[in-house]
Length: 281
Image 1 (cartoon, helix red, strand yellow):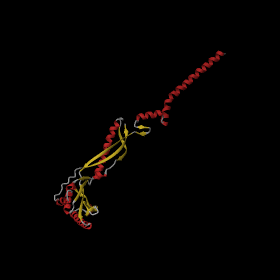
Image 2 (cartoon, rainbow, N blue to C red):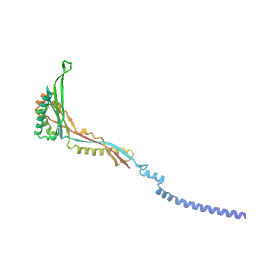
Image 3 (cartoon, one colour):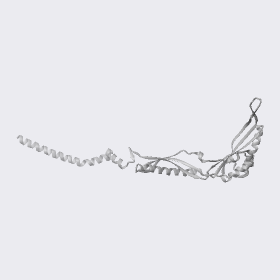
Image 4 (cartoon, helix red, strand yellow):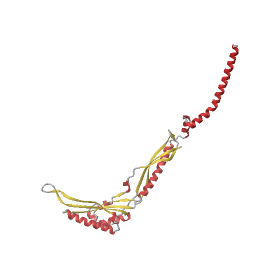
């Protein structure tokens, strides 16, 4: 009897193992599909790792980027001039020096208008009355002796073609100008040329970014941010020292009859940008 019971138990145990094995086999066959399904639904770490390998520009859900800064330069020949000069008079009395100065200033302005210079382009940029002292000969109180007064009016003539600037300067000196401070050149197309310089800067920034990206086995993709750098507004103007020709003495200025040759040279127009690009693999 005991032998029969042991045989039955053994048979049942063997059958259970077979069933369990079958169940294990079934589970084993269905497991891969289950894992793929879960990965698709929940984004398992294994699936994410594969995605990282396929899209290396993504790190932690963020795009990898490369940044570069560059300068664009456009050369342009100036075509406009701004002339600054002064009328200086002296007298023992302030009112006498002032009256003479006013007369000469009006004469210079009339000369400018007669040459076709628009009144809006003529500006009084400075005016002063200064007492003059003789520091070598002291008065009874041992103070510098007052010898008279100097009156100075500074005129600025702007928006003139460079081709006309030399004649304007020469005729103004003949009319009473005796202190030429200088000539400043600029371009009437400065804003347009600055935009061209910006475009050149952006192109140069991409070239730099591509070189940097190659170190990562990538290239510079689409731009995600672009910012303009510092714009030096003083670069709009280029100074000339032509005034030195007339500054030696007032007499030399009055005797100047030839038209000076004004050479404007070339104006360098710069623009700076900083650009950030996505890395493209």
